[in-house]
Image (cartoon, rainbow over all chains, first blue to last red; front, side, top):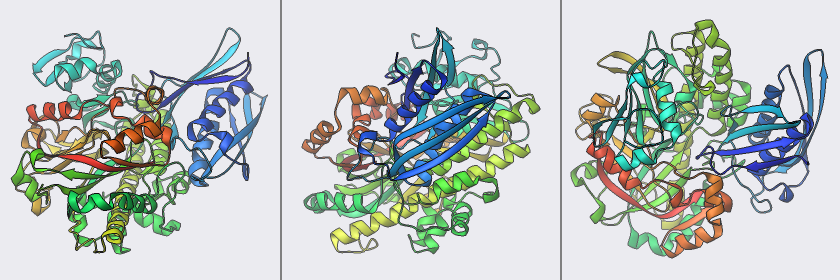
Length: 144
Length: 483
């Protein structure tokens, strides 16, 4: 099954909740990244003139994903950008996970981009990364 | 009493309900929920779980409260009020909310609907141009780090000194638009970077700028209204709802992590990770309080810069200055905050999250102009149904740590609302009803449809019957700007 995400109808009334899943750790990270980008703006309407590389190290995969998703929120405000795509590589060594990620997008442009929510943060409410039946799943609530 | 909980809910009065301490292990005080029976029945399960979780936190006094506009939030419910002993109690970012000092501001004018209606399209276009909104919007105020440090410590006063407003504005803000004890050294560089360019911006979600009308048939306390500068006769007023933007959120996120690590050291366990907290007088608690005050002051400054831009927009459209148009501030009040206040129990750290301070007549904390009538309480409804101006009471001081409702409260998720209507369709429907909407995001607009919210009038009636605020006037929207 391909990696996917779904925004949820009945969770977090005032905010935005989604489930993301994939067959592997990188796939669930990718699906969750796509959901956060979609929450902010339609990536198809966003160019690729801005790029930033980030790196995180953590023993806990859930913390690693939380920090990675928080990068989208931080750079959205710090650089005034929205995102068209992102890529990651994950390496496990010595009990630690290292994530090297690249965020790609362009400065906010109300005339050309389909903008959505000004996501203020990733929260830990209902936040859980788990593997069941061989499939990796995460539930995320974004504060908007 | 049938509602969305298996816990026993006891009727205290028609508008006050109590969950006894026996209903959940660890509750130190009862939980009290305000609202009519129908409001209570409609409340989501999260409210009951969360308000009783709050009742378990160390040092809580009297009750864990939830106002009738309450719904699920992070840790505390939205609409939550809780007061903790300064010496033995805690402080929690979950009790303040991510958007520190999200709040309401109301500006009066001498203009009438008859004067504004012919120029409404032009006015809304001008406001939309001058007050940036939506994803990634940055403000017109250029800010280096030393300037932003001064915003963090001086709040709205910094804006007045830069020419963004009038000195008398400061009298009509909670705490004069500046909380003491703010320390920029307790704020992360991440937070500063996120916040530095956002002064004077609305954001998105449920934040808005609204042009409203006060008609004579919706005035409930004309003498109090007159003290607030509200005269009716189709008078035009402007309401602003926004907060500390990404800056406040980063402060909250940073300290949730700090508190998660600190709790074991203090032997604190919580029922929900988002209730992470620390003793108020601990190093971590004091650091968060200092950083939160920075964010609160930034929010006061944000609303002050927006006020300046609103006055400029009106002046450009009507050819008279803001002063000539009588654009005085009615009040600015926070609804996401933690403050040290004195009650019969002594000094308490009062957390209000989606709840408004509501001081009654005679309070020394009120400006002289309002001391005889009480504090203006500004409650924002949905953009379709209107809003209310209320006034605080002594009963609120006695019963709810001087607190009341803040808005109407959601009943439907954003995702569900978007599936029910398209933004363009809603914009057209509202135009036909005489409400002109300018929005950056059409999907964001659909999320804020009136049907996604509780009936604000029922919520307002409920707090009035409970005696914790009184109605002054209803404010009907004619123009709205959303992110």
